Structure formats: C-alpha cells, structure tokens
Amino acid sequence: MSLGTLITGVPSAAINSISSSELLAASKSQQFITNIIQAPEIVQQTFVSKIISLNQDPNTVIDNVPAQLAVEIPRVLLSFSKESVQVDTINNKTWSQEQAVVFFENVARVAEDPEILSPSVLQGFTCSGVRNFNVSKVKNIIRAFRPRQGRPTVPLTEMQSTCMYNYIRDENLQDFTNYPSDMLLYYNYENIEKINCKSYFNATGAANFGILSKILNKEASLLYNAISCLGISGTNLTRDQVEILGNMVCTLNASFIENSDPVILENLKHCSGFSEGQVTAMENLLFTGTTLYGNVSTWSLQTLKNLEILPLYLTARFWEQFSALVKKQFLSFFLPQLREKGTELQKLRSLFQQYNSIRSKLRWRSGLDHRCTTGNITCSTIVDQAFPFGYSLSQFDLCLDANIVKNNQEVLISKVVDVSFQGVILNKLKEAYPSGLADEQVQQLRSVSRVASLDDINKWNITKIDTLFSLMISTDGEWESAKSKVIIMKYLGTAGNSLGTPELNCIGGVNLCSLDVSVIRTISSSSLSNAKPLDISNCSTEQKKELYQKANESFSQARTDVGVYYQFISPYLGEASQLHSCHYVDLC
Image 1 (cartoon, rainbow, N blue to C red):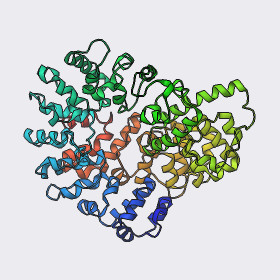
Image 2 (cartoon, rainbow, N blue to C red; image 1 turned 180 degrees about the vertical axis):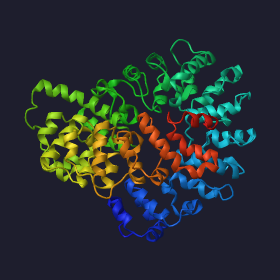
Image 3 (cartoon, rainbow, N blue to C red; image 1 turned 60 degrees about the horizontal axis):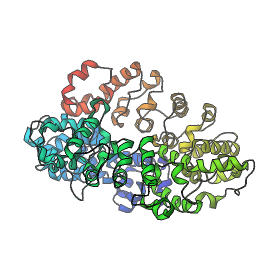
C-alpha cells in the first residue's frame, strides 16, 4: 500500500510475488483499490487471481474480491448453488455481461422483487435464464429494465430484446414507459392504438437503434410508421417531430437532416457515428446560418464547445472556418475529453486527417516541407494537449529527433493516432534502438505496434505477460494474422511461458485463431475454464473442433445445471457440434 499511485506502474510479476493474504488485507483499503483500478488490466487480473487462490468457494470469492474488480472473477466461480445466493453482495458489485448471464437465473429466482436488481445484474438476462420462471415473473423482470431517472439504462442486445418481446407480444401495450426502450423497437406496431402512437415513438426515442440488424429491416418499418403517425411531409421534420423521434434521427438519411428543423443537430449529438452523407448534411445545415450556432461569420471558440461531440465527425470544410488560434484552443480542450472517454481510434484518425488536410494544402503550395521550419519538437511540445495537430507528415519527421522519442515514448505515442505519423515514431525508435526493442519499450508501443513489419516484430523482446497484454489491447487495432502469430510464438518461446488463463485473456479468440492447431492443443482444461469467453468465429473448422473438445472437457462439472453449462459452452459451439447446438437451441 506504501506504493500509492505508483502501483499503476508495477509489473504483474511483482504483484504475483506478494503473498495472497497480504493482498487480501490490502484490498480492504479503498485508496489501494482506487489506485489499482488505474493499473493495466493484467495487473488487476493478477491481483484478483491471487485473492481467489485463498479460497475458491463462489460465495467466499465474491466476498473477498472488491466490487470494482469483480469483473475479473472467472465465470466458473460464479455458478452459485440455488441455496447460497447472496443477492445483496452480488447486486453491489460490477459485472460484465458474460459474467451476469451465468448467475442471473439464480439471483433472479431468489430476489423477491426484480426492481432491486442493479443494471449490472440485469444485463445478464437471457431466455435460458428465465426459462424456468412463470410468465408473470418474467414480465416483472422485463419491466425492471424500463428507463428510470437517476439510474443507468441497461444496454440490451438484439437477442435479449427479441426474447423480451416474445413474452409480451400478445399484450396490448399502451403505457410504454413501463418497458425497456430497446425492446419496444421490436413491438408489433399494429397492436398500438392510433391515439397512442406518439407515446410509442416518444418511448422508442430513447432506444439504441444500433442494435437493429439489417436482416430484420426494422429501421425502414419504424420510419414508415413514424411518418404515418406524426404526419411527416416529405423529408421536412418540425421541431416537435424531431423531439418525439429522439434517437431515431440517427438512422435518417441526409435529406431528412438537411431539411429538418435545426434542432435536429441537438438529437444528433447522441448518435454513435455517421455516414459521409449524414456528415455533409450536418455541415450544410450549419452553413445555412439558421441553427442555434448562428452565421458562419460569428463562429468562435464557444461555438465549437457548444457543438459538443459533433466536431469529431466534421470535415476540413468546417475546420476552415476557424482561425489557427481558435482551433488550437479548442483542441486543447476537446482532445483530452476524447481520450478520457476512450474514443475509437478510427474516429480520432479521421478527425486528425480532416483537420490536417487544410495544413497539407498550404504546405504543398508553399513548398517548405524540405527542412524543419516549425521548430524542433521538444518535451514541452509533446505535452501540449493539441499536439501533433497542425504538423505535416514531413515536418513531424524532420523536427522529431530519435532521442526525444526515446525519452518521451509513452506520452508521445499517447498523442499520435495517424498511421503515417506512427510510422515515423517507429522508425525513430529503430534508430534509437538499432538492436531491437526490450520488453519495456514494446509495452509502450500501443497502437504504433500495428504499423510494424514482421521483420520489426522479430527484433522485439516479448518475454513477459505484461508485454503480451500491451500488444493485444483490442482498442489499439486489429492484428494481421501472421503478425499476431509471430508475437504469440515469440512469447511462448520463452522458458516458462504457456497458454495459461492470463495469456488467453490477453490474446482473445481472434488472435488465438492465428495459431496452429498443435499449439492450441497445449491449452489445459483449467486454463480454458478460467478464461474469459473467446470469440472463435474466425477460426478454422479444425481449430473450432479442438477448442470445442477442450471446452466440453473444461466445463464438464457444470453439466448438472443445464442453463449455466450452456452459457459456458456456447462460445465454443460454432460448427463444431451441430448436434450439441440443436440440443440446447431452446436455451438461447
């Protein structure tokens, strides 16, 4: 505990060397927990694993593991007996959806009132989890998902939503506030009385339209019914209509966006992304000068701030309307927010490219990009929140010294998202470390690692689990199969390393599929059973069969509870066992 915030930089091996009883004692300190949840996930997993090693009884495990770290408890340790479910303890911890599906049935059975169940527990709802409940109880559980003030909305998948719908499909719903918005997207519109259709669309306006699969064509039917209900003429939405539709505006085409009341921009702030046509329409609407943001000539730093998330998606045509000073001031405010929220790498790259395309045109016209004209990049340059926006690729290369990269690698890499700029950083690192990168340098590569060649990777040291973990962080981008294979095999080439539970959690199913079947065979049953569920959809048929056999063996002790066993085995069914899949099809 004396390490304080320094715990975030401690390697997992150091945590592993501390006695389990000492770590359990440390876990009672809220300050220690606050610090360790800022550490890399592999460190958190190691910490939880050590605590679990003291006693693997499921109820003891959930008592011992701190609430914020419960997401790291293996699913096999969450299969509580029906008589020993501690609802209050479970309800006050943070769970992943994959964990919650394991214990949902037993928790929901014991809980007299589903209204008390936390969003973290409710997310475990599945048809298999409620198959033994009477219909009345299931309907009460479904109503517990309704939007409630001061309480996070429970995100639903399409499978969960359609399962819920099947339980209430024959009901003549007219009070839509008592049901989850996502489920209402699948409700039969023909059952809704005309007088209540506005209430229906007002309720679905809070839904996540992103869960709708294209195959059901629900977006089109919802819009068609909304046009009929609200009396929408053409593609012109009034202010009232926009407010009723809510999040449905995220699905509208460019014509609707451009021709509707400007308040539509406020709704669009809640969307998770846009097509090129939608972005163009938003810009066209802004350029009319009829929006809340006024005429282009009056735009300022405050305008950019008032637009909230929308500047992330806008193009060079928009950015050209602001002075360099205003843009720099805004980026110093905006970029830290985006990084803090974990904004997708591809969105950050698009923002950088749109912003920098203006500078590129100017540089090309002036012909100045043959020497460093903006001043050498220093430590103080790098810590600027707006860095490296505004640099051309050649200026970034010419003004960046290899020693600066060497001494500021972590902070520099955290700021640079453009692939070409990342290539410059990697070249500078090769210049600074001609014989190759040590584990410590590799651990700091993050998304820069994805631009490396196979020759580059072969010169890296990948001997520690922390290094493997840092290279496999999914938000840093996908790996080409050949490259992920080299990385994993380099790690396994170190004496003492194997495909254990920590390694499987790091690698994930997609990268595991890059390995030869002979390597997959080395995975032990206990390693697989304690690992997080793996997505093996990209694996070959032979790989899937091997993993299915491993999983079937790993989870054999859970067969006494058919529902729990299905949740354990389902990620590994695939095409490997059609008979098994058909046998449990009613549990989906």
